[in-house]
Image 1 (cartoon, protein in one colour):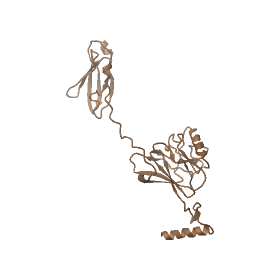
Image 2 (cartoon, rainbow, N blue to C red):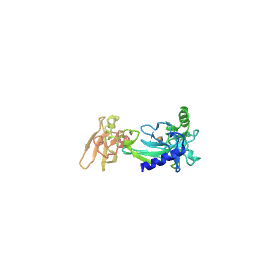
Image 3 (tube, rainbow, N blue to C red):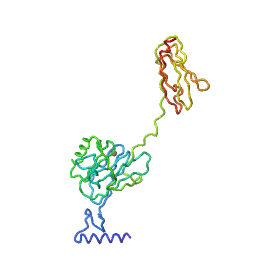
Image 4 (cartoon, protein in one colour):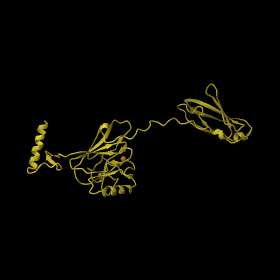
Length: 291
Ligand SMILES: [Cu+2]
């Protein structure tokens, strides 16, 4: 089979170029397919720790395939006109390039790709249509005519205020490859969840002075803590001392604080319990005045 296919290719090449050696840069028409001996797959990494294309300029021959490999984030490869960065050429040319949005999340073992056959040697301008990525410089040029083109295109992108998404996947094929074969190492995985919050400082410790009056139940507060209802009956204290707290059987917490103080529930001793919700209660200073 391999020999058979090779024979056809050779025969066709000989027919097309009878007096020359095979040019490895020029495509050959065989049965409607363009085949170039020098066809390459050119990897381009999209996104990652930064919103970029790497590389952001590529020299590609007709018949090559640019394989966009999507790293961390959620990005697109979308074609624009040279003088309209961050806006899809699809608006006027239906066949213009657009990959759709292809994400990469922590833990993925495959990498989304967009395989774009290069069908023309013309210069092509591409951007990412996600959020502000284009304005931030996630742009690239295929077959630039000089080194200045990518600079000018990026500057033009920075001059826009928003990006316009493409509408239809076009100009390539969405697929995937194993992560182990990708041209990048993913960004370090983010921690699944932040560590438990530290117990809040007891704000009652810094409360103002108060009278010697004792006010019972200046406020009665219900806090949803550890899936049970805890009633804190707060009694304004006659001193400047830090709040004292006792917990009786049945989950009733009694705390003693100065009038005008702020109580944060759950109290410091309970704040480390899983599932606790913090509720801030300010004891009414008026209750003190009435005594
Ligand atoms: Cu992007």
